[in-house]
Image (cartoon, rainbow, N blue to C red; front, side):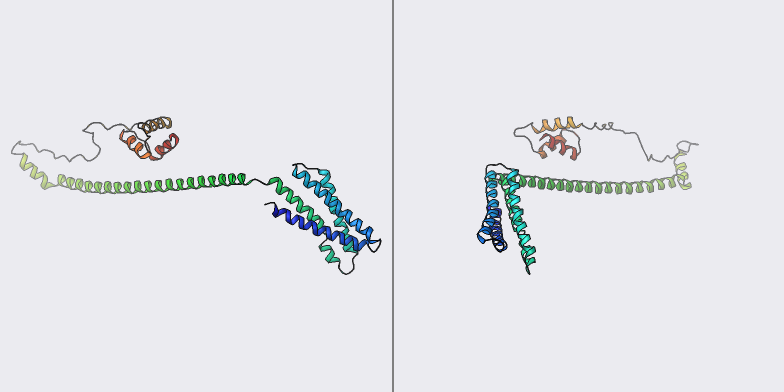
Length: 286
């Protein structure tokens, strides 16, 4: 994997060194003997290469020297300055020489990038562990989203069913009240009618002269219960009591009961709790 960064750095270094040597020989060769110009070019490139090699040695040992790094950048800037000066003094091709004057600095920058790559590189084992952790986190998030969507859908279905059942009960109660109202109105009309009074008088007078019984309407409204008094609603269980009860029912058999079996036994035992609270308690216990 390090070849992705080291190969461009090596190629850029070689190109910049050849270019610097050629420029120094061509430019200074007119003012001094060419062997001297060659020595100057090799000195610049040699210093640049020596500091680079020492930097790579320190990096391999896990060390770093700011002094060596500064010297290396100094040689790179000197090479760049030579190329820029030659481009400025060249006749007719200033733009072309300026276009390649940045190569020494670019080579140093590539080696800097390669050093950062080496300091932050991880082994395949570590990378596999990181990918596994990320995949596990994505799986857990997807499962949590699916669970929330399923719970929301079931709660919506339950609320819809309860609403429809309540609407049907209200409709039946309204129809019953309407029927009772019409029946009561009919009885009231019959009670107040003259023909009804005469008929009752003709029936009761021969039995008890001078007595005309009053026909009372049947009671329609709240009345006292005739059977056993209604059971008072049991107080709601606290979360701790509900958790203890759920845990007791769940471990009443071996292996532990599932949620459906526990909920069925919970209801059969006469306990009362909403489905949301019961499922939340199951999650806390299980």
